[in-house]
Amino acid sequence: MKKSYIILPVILIAAACSRMDSLQPQGGIILADQLKETNAILPSRADASFNGMFTKLGSPGSVFGGTRPDDFGFVMMAFSNDIEAADVVLANSGYNWFSVCGALTSRNADYANPYVRYAAPYNTIAAANEIITSYSGSDKDIEVRYKLAQAHAVRAFAYMNLAPYFQFGYAAGAEDLPCVPIVTEKTTDFTSNPRASVEDVYELIISDLTYAIDNLEGYVRTDKAKIDRQTAYGLRARAYLNMQEWALAAADAAIAAEGYTPASIVEVSRPYFYDIGEHNWIWGYDMTTDLAMSNPYATSSAWIRSFSGDGYSAGTQVYSCINNLLYDKIPDTDVRKGWWVNSDLESPLLENVTWNGVSGNAVAGMSIDNVKLPFLPYTNVKFGMYSIGGTTNDEDWPFMRVEEMILIQAEGLAKSGSEAAARDLLENFVRTYRDPAYSSAASGRSLEDEIWFQRRIELWGEGFSNSDTRRLAKPLVRFHGGTESNVPEAFRFNMAADDGWWLMRFTSGELNTNLAITDNTGGSLPVQDQNPSLRDGVTD
Image (cartoon, rainbow, N blue to C red):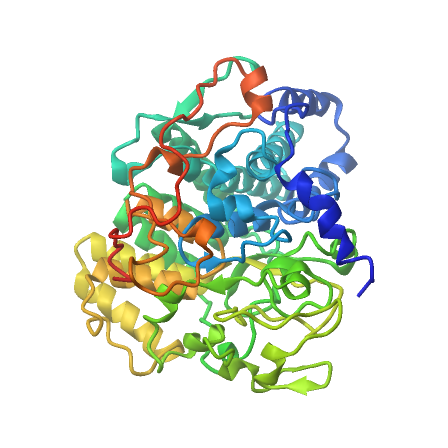
């Protein structure tokens, strides 16, 4: 590792909360300028724009151009959203660029973290709109039609990464409340573009995904970084789940899962989830070495994985850990218990891991100067790397796995009146691929809470925790009063399901330029140890 590495965060950490007043708004001027350029677009540029739309989904410097280690598109957004919920715990350290998420100070309109999380989706929407405009009138060409379909699907994906965080959803009966501005290829007024309702945003999402499904029939993608018809079905299943269209969600998820099998117990008995070629991935981000090395610190490998030889997680002991409340609920017979080290820094997943000549559980406690500090209790070893201790940080990221689709089916079936079928599906999945001793009734939870529990374990760290908590109208429960907690004191608080502080605020640039925007103002900054008696039905 470069000797200058440990100095770098100290120099840059002050920028983590810098003011964003001087930056252009993503829902206004930037989009207008970008869309105007499409009038004379060349076919070669259209193809480059199409490929670039996917590249930007997880590239370092997706918004700020490579200057920040906390700027890596939708992968960074997934990470941020999980840290804002209950299950992913990071140290309260000067090296933690995501501390605003742990403390929920991310509601400040001038901070960089929420700016990226607003700008990245609208930049992607702009890219999709540009493609839709540039190929207008050419959709008789089947290849063009496939590109248009994917642009619509990506646009829907972008809105799905905005809608749950700027307004309460269908579970709260908030369909008529203002969500985010809608910008399509037909939008012309960017300075007076009010927030559309939740219902209208989801209407656009469903319309885009239905268009994609209708126009991707016959498309065979060359790699899983692109969107095929099954991926579009999977995205629509997510949208229907948010809309509480349970039967439709289950049906779409079943189609998305066709031909895919979950990772086996043997496969997930080692650090896994790093290669887009893994058979259980439906869609993912394909990180190239050149792209990762443009800023290796702005990658999932640097932050979420615990085995990078050139990253923040290992190098500064800002490991992504599981909340011990959730960890303690995982049965010892479940292979996923080993996705995190225990309080003694032990995990069976480390049995065949070797780093710098050290093997097994000793890897957890070892230190390497300027490279690795000891794991913290409950550090994740779920996410592996091509090479333990590697420095290229070019590991891929799962945007969609078949395991998620199975859990959507189970939830959709359970909530549409087919509880027996839901239990059968859930038990078959868990017994076959995770815990041979599993019984859905053993915990005493409701079926709804049991499915959420399985989602929280299976999809831990992949960006679903915040949106799931919201769509289920659950409280944020990070600690229990009187119970030992591994959550740092500054981040140790609970919050009611209807607390207005859940809602993200709009960036200063957007508010200053789009004069029709009315900001979210509800709630107040949480304080340490507030609401110790709140419970969520899973970690009780």
